[in-house]
Every structure is written in C-alpha cells, then in structure tokens.
Image 1 (cartoon, rainbow, N blue to C red):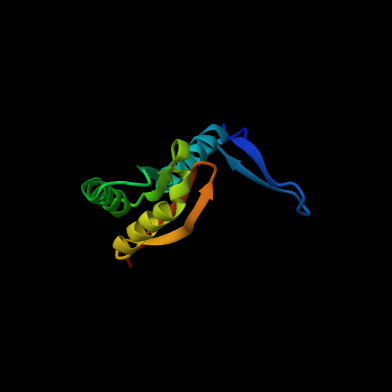
Image 2: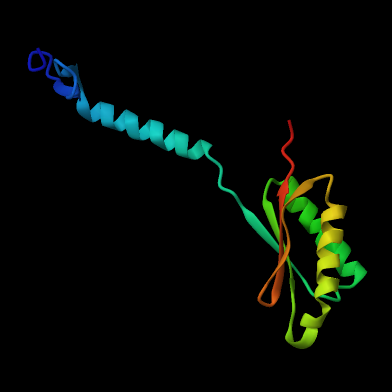
Length: 135
C-alpha cells in the first residue's frame, strides 16, 4: 500500500502485538516534529539573574539609585542577586552589610520575595530575591 501511494511505511510501536505501522511521508513527519519542538522551546522562558553590588558603607544616594535599578529588574521578571563585597579589612563590618541587605529586602517587599537570606560566602555576603508573580 505504501509503495502504491509513494509514501513510507513507518513502525509506530514495535513492542505492541501485532506491531503498529503507519503509512506516511516520513521526511514531512520529521520536519513537522522539529517545527513543534522549536515552537515549544520558544515558549519556555530563561531565568535571568541580575546582580547588584554594594559596599559595606554604601551612601544613601547610591543605595537609592541601586534600589531603583533593582526594582526595575524585578518588574521585568528577572531574579536579583544582591551582594555586599568586602575589600581588605572591611570584613569587620559584616553586620553593616547584613543590615544593608535586609534593608533592601524590606524596601522591595512589595515587588520581591526573599529567596535566600543574607549569607557570607568568602568576601561576599549574598542575598537572592525573586519577583512576586502577578496573578
């Protein structure tokens, strides 16, 4: 039958009893399958992580500027990685860095939720924020 219609005989499920076969144009089937996979891949969204860096003694004006940028990133749907970088002996100001990050989390609580609380990793204190999904 497949040769008469100038099509291919494709085995669908070989484990079935009897095996299931279908008469179709195999190249067209492969093309449409790739097209479907590409469409599904386009629909999935990549998780974007933006970073904002503070120093332990960041000034109020700089803090406000970076907070505004953080708010914009979160509204665009990106996750935010806020960190305080301690240079040299500034590691003695760990508590100031933690206070700064917690202040940021409190200021952004209407647009973001804390995914990871401030944690010291080497010379950096890191906190992760995720945007609040709008329903």
